[in-house]
Image 1 (cartoon, protein in one colour):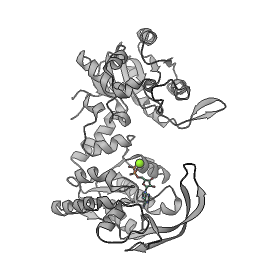
Image 2: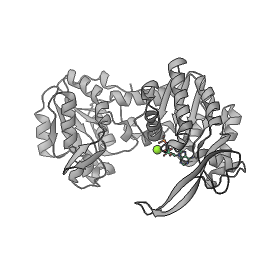
Image 3: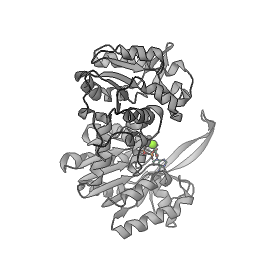
Image 4: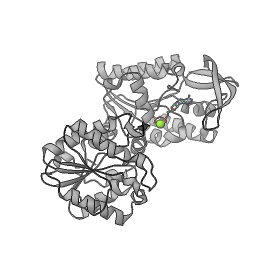
Length: 417
Ligand code: ADP
Ligand code: MG
């Protein structure tokens, strides 16, 4: 399922419609929208520089926020155009719409190597509806199509799917950008035939979020390490008490089925043996969303049953040590979901130890380490190990669906090699 790459296209003098992920966090300061984190813009630079160097006429389409079909001025891509021009060190044109005559005229006047950003495609409801007439209008300026927005590829929207289909029907080529290509390589090909031992670390909040991933990876992995709140559903399924912990009683059977499958396939399936817990005490206050605020008191580590008044927030140190040892011997590592509520420093220790082990395996054991999931990537950054792992997905929800083995519409629309 290797997809055509932007590197394979002959783009000189051609109008390349490129879908990018410019959904950057913004904030209003003195009446102006300011970009808080430009990582997503920076990440598109390699593909853009390649296209510029090869003389393409580049038309960028993206969404920002959720304007729900309205021209919401705070969600305009204009500040992104200014930022991109700054990063590229060359002018970037901006069209205050994504379809229509004006856009066509501006696109038609582009010279080789020029860059144009279209206004937020989600100013139109037709974008998310993948409405065919809207997609045709978007596609009017496109001769070739490139998708570098892996994080939006799990949705069949006009700019992620509709335009590609139209371009392909006209005989134009549709290819993956360099970012997209890397995502497909690491989340796809590398895990298809992994070097062994292949260790999968799964955590996060819910079993129900991850069960499809567990199910699929059980068929590939040598070892699966379970952490995070997900572990409490497994505990409960074994008749162990979980106190006030986040748990999904409806998924006890799901958990047992996963363990049974692991046994059948000879997968080493590991569960935590100790838990960091705290006792929540109601402060009588409400947060912004009107929910009660709890103080988490008496942080301690327990084995076996979690006391009735306590809530679990992380795997314990003993479990983290055991997991770290296994991880250090791995040749391929996939990590999806933190080992605890790492956002609170009191519960971040085990997640950090696991992150360190992943980094060590990569640096000292020559392992390939692949991190999927928005919060897992945050955890790696918090541990300051971002440059010590092989690959961190930018995909969030899209990477989860891809790991489940689903075909993403935005990927399916690209041409196979
Ligand atoms: P990812 O985004 O990497 O796929 P998830 O979204 O599945 O990960 O899970 C991340 C969230 O799970 C984090 O916000 C973290 O605080 C929470 N979490 C992990 N362990 C626990 C726990 N024991 N109790 C409550 N929340 C937890
Ligand atoms: Mg998440």
